[in-house]
Structure formats: C-alpha cells, structure tokens
Length: 338
Image 1 (spheres, helix red, strand yellow):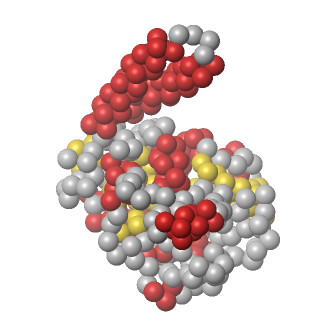
Image 2: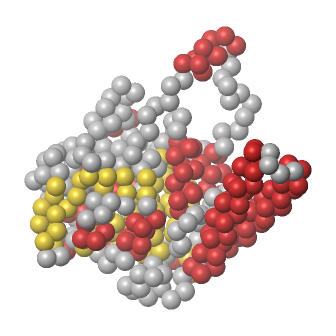
C-alpha cells in the first residue's frame, strides 16, 4: 500500500473539514435557539453531515490502511533537508485507562490538521485493543498501531507517583525499531515523541518539520514550573531554566525535542533505558545522538511555548461504583469502547 503524501490535497480536505464543522455548529445553535424553522435547518444539517462524511472517507482513502504488513511511503519532492515536505513521525505510547480514548481522540483531531504526518501508536499491552485500532482507522491520520507490555518490575502501582519509574520506554523503543526496520520505505523525516495527554499548538509542527539534527523548545507546565526552557545566547543553548537537576546535560522534557530520522537510523543502538536515574531518560537518549552544542533552538530562540505538559486528573466515578453495587453492571454495559 502506498501513501502519496500530497500536502496540497490534504490541506484542502483539512480546511473543508474545519469549515463544515463551523457550519454544523452554527446550524445546531440556530436549531436550539428556535429562531428558524427546525425542519428546514435539520435538513441542512443532514446534508452537511453527509458532505463531512464524504470528505473524511475521501481523505482516508488518500492515506493508507496501516495495518498492512508492507508499507511504502512515497513523498513527492522529499529531498534531504526539504523541510516543507519532510514527514513528521509521531511516536505516542498509550495505556489503558478511563481517559485513554478521549485523550487519543483529542490528539488525533490535532494531527488531522497537520499535513504529512505518520502516527505510530504503541499500546502498553500484551495484545492490541480493538478500540485503539478503530480510533486510528477512523481518524484519517495515516499511522500504525503496535503493542508491547512494560516489564512487570517497571510498572507503577495505582498509588505510586507518576515520576517514580520511567514510563513508555519499551513502547518508544518498539517504535524506533519499527522505523529502522522500515527505513527503506520511509524517505526523510523528523521523529517526535508526543504523549497522548499533552496539548499541542499547530505551530509546533512547523518547528518540528524544519529540524536538521535535534531541535529543542520550551514546554509549558513541566517540572512543576510554568515553563521549562533552554536559555539561548547567540543561537546556542547555554543552560536550562529548570529547578530539578539543572546540571543535567539535556535538562529537557520528552515533549521538548525532535530528532531527524537520519540520526535515528545512523545510531542503531540509541534507545530508552529503564536503569537510569530519575529525570535522565531524555539525557541518556539524546547523549547517544548528539552534543549540546549541536542543538537547534526553535520557537523563536526558545521564547515561545507551543506544547504543554498537561495531565488529566483521574475521573471521579463514585456514581459508577454505586451503580455497580446496586445493579451489578457498569454504565457502559453493551456499548462499544469506541
């Protein structure tokens, strides 16, 4: 199966999607206000919904069924260093929880607005789930779903703080292996590790696409700060404005850097490890690829925030537990997960 990443066509469909969503919202509001004949308005809504469905299907057919074993990405004009057409390979570890699907839906809607991306989703599970596969297949974002379980001794307990053990190492490593194994088919691109619960400005992806080696930028709401960021002088990173272990060579959040695919392919042993000191996952990985002097400051010399390390709070489900106790069933009984 071939993906012909035609950014012009993709942008047209993305724009059309956005316009139709706006029109639908307007018409729904008109109906609720009852200022016009509801029957006429609902007919318009139905027509627009049909048009939206057609656009989605057309865009999806332009992309790829990434569950096929043989995947070829043929990007037109993708020469080395051509940042206008470079593919952004998004690596997203994910795990089963109440907010997993809502988080992934939100991220998929962001990625639908970004031309020329390939989304690698890796489930922390021994077996793949139908819900994540269905989410990807219906999102119109080209990508693939992989799965690998975190070794039991590195799994967090429900009561453990989120920072106690490294998360997502096995999943990110599997994605790196997939990229290396499929490198003859991939062309040129940039790799970005995007957690499923972060918030991303579309401006970030323009910064990512232009990365030649390793690009860095600030991350909002990271490390207990409003912003964690590199300090830039004369185009070079001179230090890191962080409170936690600022002496780290790469005192940066996972969301704060992207790596050109060529470096991943050249350094075949570069991977994430569990046996590293707290906060050193990024340093350990980046040290195997590059030196601090070679980092590329992005986001207007690291003065702008385009990504936020947001984290969902566990939902309060007292009513759910009460329902199970009363009726012996859950509220989503008989429903598909997605």
